[in-house]
Amino acid sequence: MNNFTEPLCILKTRLFREHDISLHALSKERGFLTVYAFGGAKSRRRFIGCLDKFTIALCTVQKSMKRGYLTLQEASLIASSKEFLHDTMKYGVVQNCALFLQVACRAWSYTSGVYTLFYDLLQACSDREDILFAIPFFFRFSLVALLGYTPSLYSCVVCSRHIDTIALPFFSIEKGGVLCHSCSPLSSALRIRDKEILYVLQYILSFSPIYWKSIPYNKQSIQQACTLIDEYVQYHLGVVWDNGRFIHV
Ligand SMILES: [Zn+2]
Image (cartoon, rainbow, N blue to C red; front, side):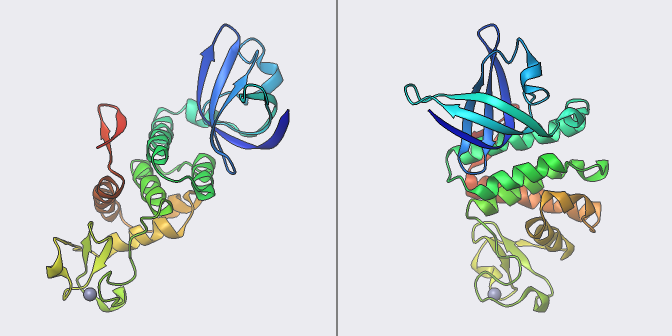
């Protein structure tokens, strides 16, 4: 038998047989795991508060050498998900991010940065209702960057001219970043009418979700940045929202 103890983010829970619960969880070192909490549905005192969706718990897990399945032995709560479970809007935001995470990472390499991003999201889902709509887009943009598609936001992706010297920048989804006026005819780039949209994108990739609620830009720029993010993520990851779920296209 092999044991390990580490924090797990619980993404999904499912009742199986009469008394047992399976947990689909995210681990920093091991990526996505399915862990069985035998007896977890019968007596929750053993794993008090740790078997709820979107909880973060320090878990001791035993790996069966014979069959390879993982069994939860002990768990202690790091962060409760009660706040999400009782707030429909926040629950919807975290659920959307969790669904995207599972679809996007299924086909792409997992990195420990993915765990940290989701962990921070659970710790700090925004209290600012005016930007709550934007959090799933911010999350997708950060995740796509972690998966290797960081756009060039500080200089022209073709000639490397710095953004501070470009008065009217363009953005190319295909080329993955900002274009100056001279380089823009090379592609079907979008004109960025307000540079603040680029500052929103820079802010998202510069700060952890813990700081997203302090984003200092106006709602209109954030909305336009979200539209651009949606197109960027669809193009590079091929993941779209369709009938209440994310799918690869
Ligand atoms: Zn250029």
